Length: 291
Ligand code: AMP
Ligand code: MN
Ligand code: MN
Ligand code: MN
Image 1 (spheres, rainbow, N blue to C red):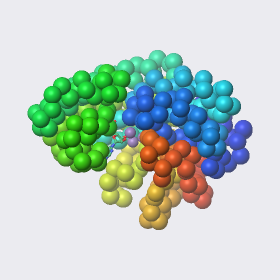
Image 2: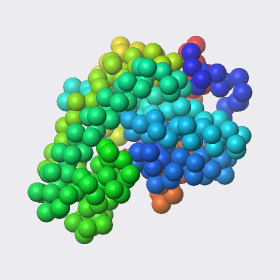
Image 3: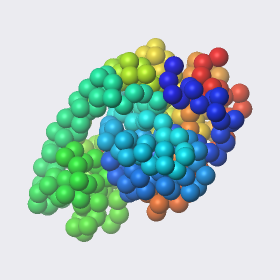
């Protein structure tokens, strides 16, 4: 089906040697795409997917550096999607990064992000007594559509918050004054665009949405109905109950298993590149393809 599916032939198991979820400075990560690939290779990662938020911008440089270092770079992205009145994250893997379907979706998402960033800036100018907050986030990020972590960094630099977490809690989370609801692609549209461009769709970090078990199962039923392929179950830091829940979801829904660190910065050493736990027993990994 896609490049991800072709990996099975080359790699036996890949435990500790893959990472299918991480971020570079093309979205909200600290490292440039090339520095990210260098760090991954140095840490023993053999197959890496760069999955920046709604952006393909880091992929060419990452792929070039990966080729030089002899590791495999899988094209990836983390798409923000709308599900009812909630935002979910879909990791897309193994697509053709030049295909019309994915490039069109990404330009729509970037347009939505820019409108959102401008509004967020206006709201922070008022609520946090800032001046030209949007312009400052643009400057700091080097992006026209900086995401929330960049605004958090601006707020921290100007002494409006004690920490990045405080910025989210005080201003940027849903329900807070600078959270801007955004018309992201729907789950169906996003899955379709990934499939049309030759990729697969993975529901990212299922335990991080604050859903009840019942609600999560509703999401998964919708995700499967939309054509979703896999669930991101091999992620750092799950407690035994969450591991149990992930195993149950894999048992009850026709989904493959993916995994990744969601690495953003070397400062978060506990979720470094390639630090991905083993797949649950009986899981069918994404690189094995459907049974
Ligand atoms: P955005 O894509 O602009 O909605 O920003 C989402 C990103 O912000 C996530 O991928 C995380 O990197 C970060 N983030 C989200 N929620 C929080 C939070 N509560 N505390 C710290 N960082 C967060
Ligand atoms: Mn992020
Ligand atoms: Mn996410
Ligand atoms: Mn992520």
